Length: 109
Image (tube, rainbow, N blue to C red):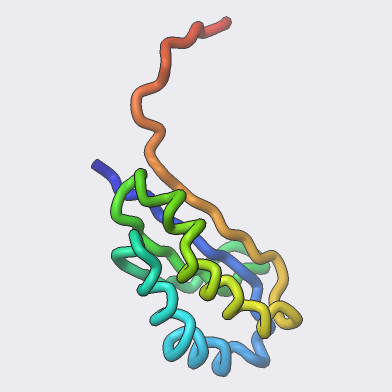
């Protein structure tokens, strides 16, 4: 079974990146790891044009996706970002989960 992932991508102003990383590691990441259902966190340097920040959060299972999004802890983590919004462009939050078995469908050619 593959676990779902929540993926955050953004373009952060390069001039504030060091300060942003300190905030992320010292304040935001601990808040995210308190969200029920978040089991691991990963960070990567994104190679997409215009995107210089990517964080991935592994969720415990598909049943936890809605709880992760709706929890008080997630609300606090979203509010953490508010101070950075003037320095952020192209912010996206996506969830990737397995499709599971597909209902029967008809293939048209």
